[in-house]
Length: 322
Image (cartoon, rainbow, N blue to C red; front, side, top):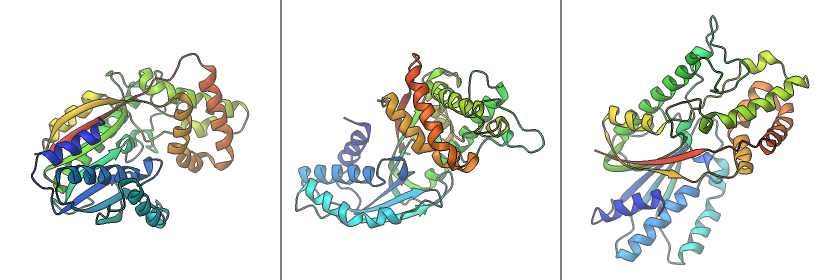
């Protein structure tokens, strides 16, 4: 059983009735193929279990979160089709009271009233840092990660430390904010791309980015971008060690860690497509639109040509508000 279903089942089984109004926050909703994918999974699962147990169905208040600037209009335009699909999948009697709202804002900060959330979900969203580590953008004396766009085996130790520190600060802020917003007994399911080794420069984390870096080097050789431009591009992203997550949860102190499980990772081709979807916006902003297609075409070629296969790690944690 997927961890999400396991947590929802436990939540339903641990109480005689769910709250009359059940609030769900989905942080970074655009990271899925469709922003309503997780909401569908959660509400359909709760509906089926409540129906099987003869329990009344709660009202669902769903909050979709993304950074300011994300266009929620497409989501709202799709709602009629979304409701029709829910009825098709769950039967004509499926008539849950479902209210969906958009909440733009940085998920490292407070976004909701105190003790207002029953369930929080985040899928790989917390890998994104709130900013490029400031040590790498200092105008007077910046750290230079020469020829690299991310942590690498050749990165100076100070660069690696800067990324670690920024992630730990961001995740601590996320936990502190959610500790104010989640009701006692409320749950969170958080998924990450990460690693099983303490070394931040291991292949689990860095190989994919090294391959993308090779694609950038190809563009430099072809005269399509300048080397100095690459040296100032740093991805605001970090893939944590499982023990880092455990340590931050324990240090913050408001949540109890229930489960940590590893997830399946997609094929190399899917990885390449997902990498473009995740990072194309920042690449366009820094380098311009004209190099993007050429870059990712070369990136796919680099992945296919290398015998050292990208092996990525994904894991999910579930926690309960004390």
